[in-house]
Image (cartoon, rainbow, N blue to C red):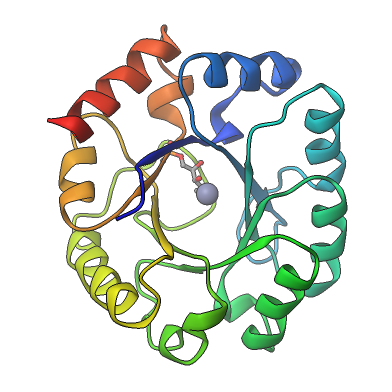
Length: 221
Ligand code: DX5
Ligand code: ZN
C-alpha cells in the first residue's frame, strides 16, 4: 500500500495570494498540491492553466503538483503543463478521443499519468490501459465546484477500484476527490484510497495545520 498523501485543492485557496497559500498548506503538512483545471466546456466553471502552474514553480514551490484536467480535449495542453512543472496529470476518459494515446503522451512528457472517473462513470476502460496508469482518481462529487457534499455511493466504487488496481497495477495510487474532511476520510481510506484531495476542508479552516493534522490523525487511528 502506498503511503497516504493529503492533497489540498487550491480551488478553494485565495487566488489573489496563491503563492503564499500554497506555501502555507505545504508548511501545514500537505504532501502534494492538487491543481484543478476547468474549461467552462467539459465542466461549467473556468479556472487556471499552465501559466499559473509555472508561476508557482517560479515562486519557488518544489512540491509535487497534481494537475486534474477537467477540460476537453486534453491532448494539446499536456505538453504545456509538463513544461510548466506538473508532476502528475490526470484526465477524464470521456474527454479524450484516444485514452491510450493521451496516457502515453503524458508519460512521454515525463509526468505520471492518471484517469479520473466521475461518480456515474464505469471503471471499465481501466482494464485495457492499467499498465499506463500511475493513478486512478475517483470523483466523490460531480466535477466543477469545490465545497460540495461527498456522495456516499462512492465508497463501494473505491472498493471496486482498489480490487482492480490490486489485480492489474498494484503500485498505482488511488485518489479520491470531493467533499473529503476529517469526518469521512477514514471511511475513504478503509475502502482503499491512499491519496485524499481536500479543498474547502483545508482552505476553509482557520488553521490549515490543524485541519491537515485532524485528517492525518484519522488516517493513523
Ligand atoms: C471539483 C474538484 C475538486 C474540489 C474539491 O471539481 O475537482 O478538487 O476542489 O473541493 P472540496 O474538497 O471542497 O470538495
Ligand atoms: Zn480535483
